Length: 391
Image 1 (tube, rainbow, N blue to C red):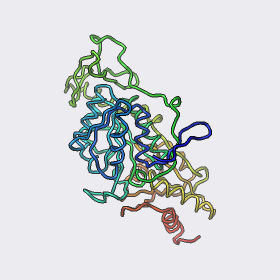
Image 2 (image 1 turned 180 degrees about the horizontal axis):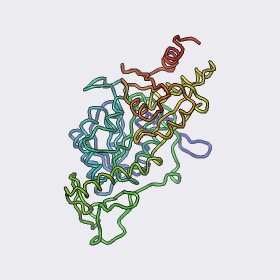
Image 3 (image 1 turned 180 degrees about the vertical axis):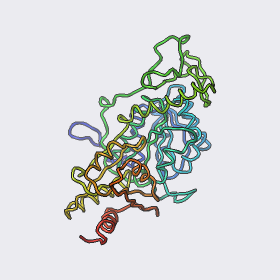
């Protein structure tokens, strides 16, 4: 990791890949366990954690596959460790059942998915954003996802730190979506000072073991199972369970449990939402995007504005739960909303669900493994709105 210098106010500066920024974010968040299986284009995250974790007293283990990888970090979390894994599309698919297990047992973990082209083996070294909906709906059953995203090396670092904060606060899995371009590009990264990182950890029980119920439902709906090995004995099961942790099929208890799992995320959704607006105040043509597509959208807005076209851009740094409030605010003046994605159209479904009927919602898609370019977005908008590519 080159360019080891500092800013004028003392913040360390590095010149690194997005994947390397994830490693630094995880370490700065207190992650001390990584279980994973190498897969392009996320492998640098595993390599970085294998190199750096032992230096801070952490543990890296390469598992036999992605199913075992997520199982290992769930076990580490149950023992109280901040834990994570990293993968790409095929590996993410294999993790889905255990993702649901972490969700229902309320064990905080972080999963970084550096997306690539598919289906199947697809385009291992090319970018895509085709796991957008899998991140929301991939695991079976009723499940409410927390998914963050990044469009730069700096955001990869910040999103990883934020993922650990949310996972610990809500005792739930948190997914970070990158794509091959973001994972492998190199940019300047400004690191936080140690004093600026407030490490968040799940609260420890405040009652003696004999009074302890691991899945009591407090006012914010968030249960925090005590770490194993600390004197608190209870059951962890993927079956729907009551407040003791033991299985139940009593209808009222099932409803109570599933409602609480959903409500703890919905109740905190405004804390999860993260977005950035560009030129939206008077925007007639609003672009919505995340990840590498967001970089192209920012460039497109700059080009269109120079041509006196009132374009704006809403960059989503969190995707699920979907930030409907920020979308509606940004689209107040819009006649058209364009959803730019490196897939055949996934995020657009959530945009259409939440946008008012008087606004046209139009897809801009590229799914050949290459990134969207600002000029492509500009050309498409002119063609769609004006019927020709010059104004």
